[in-house]
Each structure stands twice: as C-alpha cells, then as structure tokens.
Image (cartoon, rainbow over all chains, first blue to last red; front, top):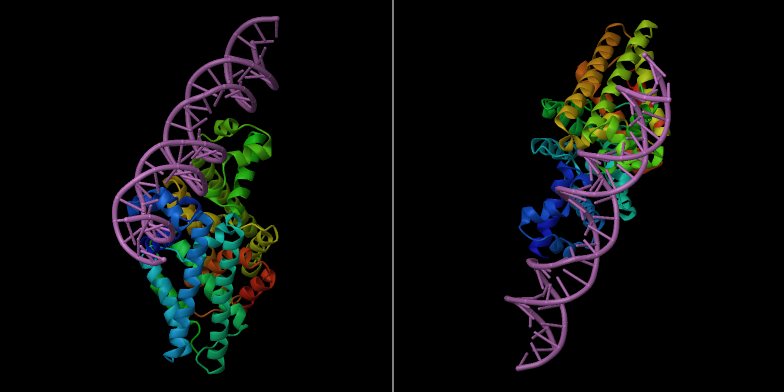
Length: 186
Length: 186
DNA sequence: AAATATACTTACTACTAAGTAAAAAACAAA
DNA sequence: TTTGTTTTTTACTTAGTAGTAAGTATATTT
C-alpha cells in the first residue's frame, strides 16, 4: 500500500481526534504532507470516504489487539488494564479517542460512516461486557449490576473523561482511570 | 429582551446539541426563523459571541435550578434524581447535553467560550461532588471512592452515554440512568 | 518500443461560510 | 407630524470548503 495513503489516514485520524470531523479540511492534510489538495482526492475521492476508511482501520486494529491478548493468554484484569492504557496514552497525547470524537458528530456523518462507527461501538461494548462477565465468574472482578450495564459505565467514563479533561486541563487522568479499575476489585 | 434574540439563542443551542458547533451555520438559524443572515449578526456580531452567550445562559439556568432545589429542601437523592432527569429528557428529545456537545470541539472554540465552558463543567462537578459527600455523610448515598471521583464517573457516564446512544440507536437509556442511581443505594 | 498504470500537479468550478456597510423599515416619543 | 432610535434587509466581500477535469512525469507491463 502507498506510503502517502498511509500518511493521509494517520493524519486524518489525528485531525479528527484533535479538531473533530467538521473542523478539519483536506487542506490541513495537504499542507502538513506537502502535497496538493487533489492528491488526497486521488486516494480518497470524498471526505466521507476517508473517514469511513479511518474507522475501518480502527476496527481492525481493535480486533487484532483482542486476538493478540487472547493468544497471549492475558487474563481479564490484564486485558481491561491494557484497554484502559489506550485512554491514558490518548490523554497524554492530548487526543480524544476516535469514538469520542466522531460520536457527537454522528448526525453529520455519511450513512456508511455511521454504520462503521456503530459497528465499532457495538464491538467494544460487546467485548467489554463479555470480558467483565467472564472475569466476574472467575472471581477476577466484582460488581453488582449486569455486565452490559457495567461495560457501558466503564466505556462512557473513559470516553467522556477524555473530553472533559481537555476542557478542565489539570485532572489527574491516570489516577482517575486507576479508580475505575479499583472499583472492580473483589 | 428581544424575542428574536431569545429565539436565536434557543435555536443556536438546539443546533449545537444536535449537529454540533462546527456543523451549524447562521443560515440554519436564519432559515428557520425566517430572517436574514445579517439580522443574527445584529444581535450576535460573531459566532463565538453567540456560543459564549449560550453557555452563559446554561450556567445561569443550572445555578437557578440548584438554588431552587435547595430552597425547596430537596434531599440529596431528589436533587441527583432531578439532575439525571435532565439527561433522560435530552435522550428523549434526541439531543446531547451542551457540555457533551461542546467539549469535543473545545480546541476549535474561542478562548472566552472555552473559559465559560470550563466554568460550567467545574460548577457541575463541584456541585455533584458536594451533593455526593453530603449525601454520604447523611447515609443517603453509599459509595467507596472519593466524592470527586464518583462525581466524575457519574457525570462522564451521563455525558458519553447520551453521545453513544445516538450512535447505537436502541439502548434503554432510562433504565441505564436508573442503574447509575441504584449503584449509590446504601 | 509502445502502451498503460501510478502518483501526482495545475487550474479550475460550484458552493458555503462568516462577516460588513449602508439603506430601509418599524417603532417611539416629542 | 417630525425626529430619533431600534431593528431588519439588501447587497455585498472575503475566505474558505469539497470536489473535478485535464495534464504530466515516472515507473511498470506488454
């Protein structure tokens, strides 16, 4: 695959995660990469095309991460910890997660992009609920309500706190994430 | 105060809460109100001006709500329940909350708007933490971690789940909110 | 060597955005 | 009824936006 294409995807993702979908333009990318506007259209005929590709890439990345953790026999706690670490890293890099960046703009996205985004959110929540359920049965986690509810609370907390920490500025994010994990301790 | 001005503020808020800050235009407002583009500039010289006013209005609305609840001797549970009801209503109206709409776009906002938004988030989190702490001491609530942490988890959950429910579509939001409250039961 | 595909650039169209200056209309008070 | 103020429209500018058509140099295939 083309290096330029890869760079466009990477830069596009970063722009979405810092400025948001409706605030970034092809010019932001072309200027940064030192190419012309039309060169981006060569790889991604339309903006919706680009964003859909970015979401698809992220879905794949997530699937690979989960597969990798399972094959390396990560236990439930280690897997959840690895997932939370993605958010700690995002915060350090002053970026939001892709879901937290695109979800607020979902109404303004193309239908095919909406579909991919839904697929991604569904996938994450299903994985989280499954992990929590399995961990609870094995005594790794302890929590009162349903695994689905708990998955939603944990994911929501991670997504929104990343947005809010950009507003508040200070916020000890790493510590906050730790308290989410601690809450599950048996 | 002018009726047109009030209508612009209301419509602007709704547009931010449905499409987002960077996706709505003065034309969206002028078309809906049957006035001209320039008429909006008469009341709000710039877009940043309008958005800042919208945030300020919401801060005031929140302050009034809290004052009102205190003066009517709402207990901690009733106050939290009333706060959660705002989000259930938002979900019913297929809108995000203002914080959840503007926070992801904070980098693209004018500095004065950023300041007001921070003020709003600070205020809500302080109030929530205060309420949780007081309620815990009185035995109305029960939770393990600090009131500040719990306030952040609850607020994040409400904000992000509103965004995610717009992506997922189905989601039993009312029930989800109930589970957040149930979690605090002693 | 000729044909074709790749990876672009140049130069444009069509449109939308925010914002402005000046004129006109609407409304009040004298 | 005149005068002044507030509100709104007309008509515009400036500065973008996504997207396209046509061309070009270079590499690859036939």
